[in-house]
Each structure stands twice: as structure tokens, then as C-alpha cells.
Image 1 (spheres, rainbow, N blue to C red):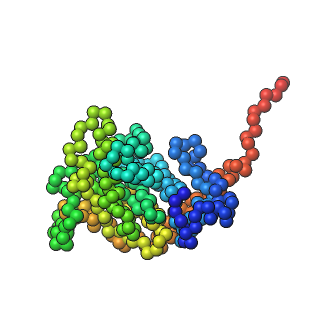
Image 2: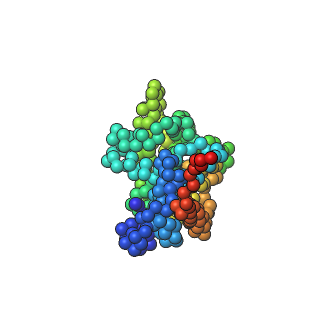
Image 3: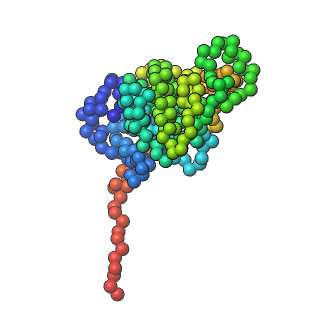
Length: 305
């Protein structure tokens, strides 16, 4: 299980301290659901300040947020935290091996009809979030984002009307420590292979290339410690999910400056997010425990007249 705490404790250390840490706390959303998530008692401690969030907790949050019956304005597909880990097991992103490892993970989902694809990334004990905007759209050359734009270009862009985001890969990283170009390369390669794998699919027509689907590093709040990255990923997810697709402030806006900024939330908001998720965890765990304690329902008896 990925994620280490303030004292760099391993899961083995935690379970040695508390033998019950590996016992199930509850299953979300329910035991018979496809891809149900089994939360263990030890996961609860990872919601304390100073601890890393692990796969279980991030998947729990994303699954809960996307399980609402109300359709969000952003039509999105959210991958499990294990998706990118499996994809990047292939030594080269542009290989059939990489796609073969994950092609069944989104069977039955038309990825290219979505407004956005969310891809949590865990590497080197750090979490970030990659978001593919308009994965199925073909960007004309004039819509390609120029990441080398100067400050004068940005000022000129401010006077231009808002424009829809062309295809791009947002890499939302609270430490800017992940290799954004590498992450985007794996994601684009996966999409290129998935496009070609569709029955009767037309050619890519320049889609999924670095020029037509560039990396964008939006201006975002930065963490000031070594353990809050998982919570920042949840906050970044909320900046996009459940809202209309983002637009650029102008035709040459390279960072979605009208939507993202470093002051969008504070460390106090991060702590509050931990507490909200902890309260949700406690409620579900208590309900599961109550179900186990409840006596089995009495069966109907046939009584002779």
C-alpha cells in the first residue's frame, strides 16, 4: 500500500503497532459493487495531519464524488490510482506493452466523447493529478497552446475573448516535482492506441501528439510540507469536477489564468478536507460495524393450524 507517514513508517510498522490495522473497516460503495474498495482500519490514521494519503483513501474520495445521481456539467471519466502505475510499468510509453497492460480498464467507456479524463499519479512518494481536456477533439494549428509565450503575449491575450480549451494535458502538481512531460507522453500514447483500437476508427489526424495535445502547468496552490500532496490532489480534482469545462482567458493564455491561481485554497482548507474525509470514514465504518453486530433477521415459520 503506497504512502508513508511523518516518521516514514511503513505499513508493516503500523500493523506491528496495531495488529487490527489490517482488519476491514468497511467496503465502498457496497461489497457486491464492481471494483468495490475495501478500507481497512489502518487507513483511518492516514487522515491525521502529517500523514500521507494512500490509494484506498484517494480512490474512496474520487469514487464518492463521482457516485452522485446528479449528472455533473463536466462529462468525465476518473481512472483509479492504479491506472497510471500499471501503464507506466512498460519501460517505454510508445509501446504496445503499455497499452496492453490497461486496455481493459475502461472497456465500455467512450473516452473520446468525454470532456475530461482524470488520471491520479503516484511516483516517488508523491501524488499529482493529470487531467486530459477534450481528449477526442482535433485541435487546429491555431489552437495549439504556445508554452513559450512571453509575458507580453500573456498581456495581449488578456484582451482577447475567452476561448474553449483545446486538447491538452493539465499536470496539477503541488510540488512541481513530477516529470510532467513523461506523464503526458504515457497518457498521449495510451490515447493514441485506444483510438486505433476502436472498430473502424479513422486515423488520428495529428491527435495525441505533443504539438496538438501539449502539457499545461496551471498556476496552483503549493504545499509547504512533504505529506499533504494527496489532499492537494483531491482539492485539484474539485477545482474541475462538477464544473463546466475550463476556458482560457484568451487565445494565448497558457495556464488558464482565469480559473487557476495560487490562492484558491489555503493549508487551513487542506486540514478541513482531511477532517471531512475522516468524518465520512468514521460514519461508514460505524455503519458497517453496526451491521455486523445486528442479529440476523428471523425467518418465517410455517405454523400448523
